Length: 495
Ligand SMILES: Nc1ncnc2c1ncn2[C@@H]1O[C@H](COP(=O)(O)OP(=O)(O)O)[C@@H](O)[C@H]1O
Ligand SMILES: [Mg+2]
Image 1 (tube, rainbow, N blue to C red):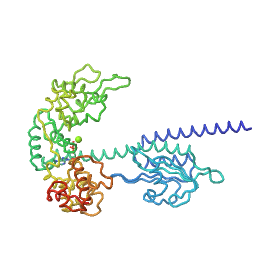
Image 2: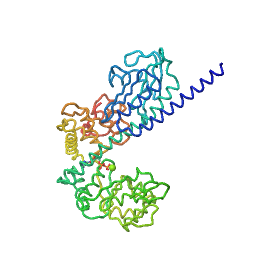
Image 3: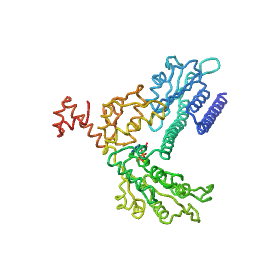
């Protein structure tokens, strides 16, 4: 009898395991095709509730940059809302634990639950949300408490869902980027002049614009240099839009982002049957025929690719991977880098002959901190673009806020200015953005916001420490720092 019971138990356990695996399999397939966050969360909550025989369940994905919160519930007559869920002690414990939890006799969302289990959705150390199930249903009364196996199941569901959600959010962000690029391209192709697109009247920017207009007409190689966020890609697109090639494609490829093994096929295409199941496909050079290719982070192109690029530039022909045929191509190459290419040449990481080919004209983009006079116009430009996109009136900065930005070193250059303003616009309900609404990097190290190690932020932090140590006495702080008081005032540091 005991043996039969044990056997029955074993086979029951086995069936349970198989069912769980099948469910996970179904969930993973579903997550692959779902394109909406809501549908994705609905799916995992419904599966968790039904597999674990729970009476109720909910899933919450917290709000994040531009992505609204998402809630999904099963078995709740009324749900207190995402804010209440996000501040529920059990949910907070899940976020802290970074792993699954189960408990009995817990109050969740203000109501007693006999048994509760949940798991956080974690991606790269970030908790995106949680999935929670409450109370087990069993024939004729309350079921057993959620156990280790249930926690493991929830953890697996969460592990499948979190990257899928993350990918969806990244996709949204990319789509927003693409919209912005489309809009910019329209502007570039339309009646707008270069000044409306490439904002700035500083000597550095005037030189950039002059070089762009002069280099656009020919097909000589252009190398754009500058820190991240200074507008290298924008200038590349402007070069294309101002050229006779403007109606042919402009294609960009980031040499650092594409794995070496894929880069060659990506650039030059691939012939059918190079490996089993491989279909023939053209590369960017063929696709951009008559137009422009933008090779971003060119310093990161592997030497083998550099050799092939050189051949294309010299012979204006490409050969697909695994192909015998040479295909003539007419493409202009614009490259960009933030790296010390000359050093890379000395260290034999970059071919000198390719270097001369791609930098017949060199366009250096100055960092924003070296052309602060451009900041006010850039602010206006970015704010009206955000407003046009959102169909609202542009917000404005107070004088103090502008002053704060004029003093800020912008380690992330124009892109950082855009992000700062985007954040402030989202944060401020009214029409006016004040200095305190700007979340400057390194501005408040005590809050732990600053992880920045660039010189300018460190300088600000140091000044702040000295000021704090002398109780805010600026004359005394200036003496200790070895700078004059005016300079210190201009740094606009507050403690
Ligand atoms: N002078 C400028 N005027 C207007 N927008 C700019 C300017 N420079 C950069 N931007 C904007 O800043 C952002 C970052 O520029 P991007 O070309 O991607 O920089 P990089 O390629 O150097 O990292 C983009 O949104 C771009 O449109
Ligand atoms: Mg870039």
